[in-house]
Length: 403
View 1 (cartoon, helix red, strand yellow):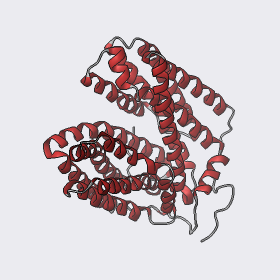
View 2: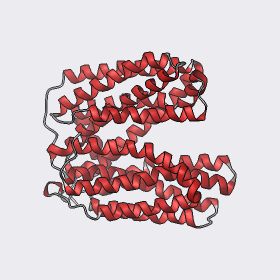
View 3: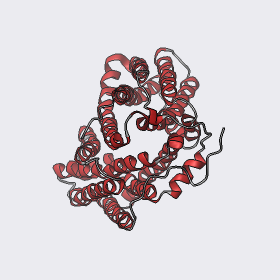
């Protein structure tokens, strides 16, 4: 893994680390605070729902503004707004409707921030460094998730849920300060245009290499999530784990993803990169099958979840390829469309994984999901073999109307 030399990228990465650690830690603290103040489990479930609803529709519609505005300033505005929101939730004794309203606003900002942060990477590194920059960013994101959940429990116990949320607000201010140091390279300057989500969808429909990358990503994400989401049932029913063991099983998934990120060679053309991603993901899925079937053995169960987490590696390879093929003028909008597609795949994996595990034994359900991942990725890989090398599209199929 290679860290790009761009100073602006390193500031952007540092800001991402700061805000993501605080954000993942705050998710647990937010649930604790709502339960402490209301004693209502339904309210906790409603908070969880509000955190994801804006990722389908409203968040995507707002994200496209990043293709019309200064992305750096937009990220700083997003961080500043989330800082105020989390400090208010943590420091003020707000009624439940007020908390829920602020949670929804913060959740609506998340897809706008994430799509434009992904888009800004291409503005601050050269095209030759884009794949390496994406690889490092994905590694940081997975590590932040792993560490952030652990920090959330510690901070909630040390500072209380409210204090942990206030601290999360401070991390967003730190992120905004770091992003303010970012300078956009000349190749990141966009033409004056009025991009739309429709233009982003047209690009994805027209570019065959991007379509293959997206379909492979959806296969990998949905099948791997069907295994990850059943960690509690698998650990308790198959392996006989208690709460700590179940936590270890859930943590094994991002560990597997991070390990594969270190193995992925990010150099080369788009088709070469996709082939490497397919190879690693297929091997991970195939190796996980016997380990999951032997899940009664604790070591095998943990190893099975580690290798299942390795299947997510294709989403990184696909992100690298699609990201450097997207025209500059529709990058944020395209990432927003991809976010919605991946979110749907994650949701489908969660739901189907639960249904199959309920109908069948958990170990068989998990192993069958990895078998489906292997078959789906192999089929997509054969499609890739018939795809000629092509340059990234310079513009979407239909021109973007001028402002």
